[in-house]
Image 1 (cartoon, rainbow, N blue to C red):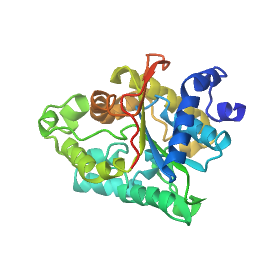
Image 2: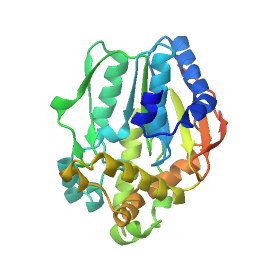
Image 3: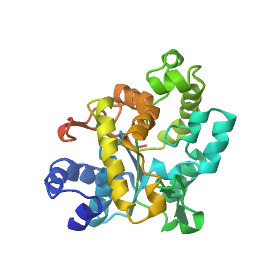
Image 4: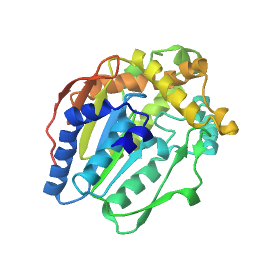
Length: 297
């Protein structure tokens, strides 16, 4: 566990948090996997800075070391389109699509195929990776190869599971970015259409859902800023990488890309997920509950 804490830059106090809230989640997942007798996909939703990546890694550790399962944790971020592909989208559809993050900027075909092969094949599956400091996908020849099938595949993402909005909710802009850079709503309608067409089929393959529920979107900026500061520390010895770390003002604009779907997830997902963990302003869990029972086919 100490190696885990160091890798994720976590205090020793995280051990007690993990024992209190998440050991039972890992035990439940292991039980469901044994009951199903097949690979399971676990989806984790949480806004930027909520701790979803840490939770995914912790579940990987617990499921593999305690329960003896073959596990991998993936991030939806690793399936971003390349910078060149997003630049092409920006020219063809809308300039805001050059910025990674929202639905429509992921390679959903690659994501669906990766999940399919990890759960239903007996081959070595290449695992895509994305370099956020360089804002581009890691070359395919550097991807890790993982032997399938796995027992549990964990997929985490800030927008994971968020359903499309009703068309009338798209009409009025919700922040300065939408008012000034998407006044006609072309970008937000494209994002919404992508969720319905390309993302929902992937969400339908997820067996167990967990959510880290933030208090509000207002807390996201501070938490996301902390992530950027950690990235800056990791890139300190790489001059070209430091150029890709955002300043506070750049970050303030950047997270406005995520406001609409973050708020959509906060409105819709708490009663839909199987495991809900409510966070306070300091990212401490103040409540855990199970809004919906797990139903495995």
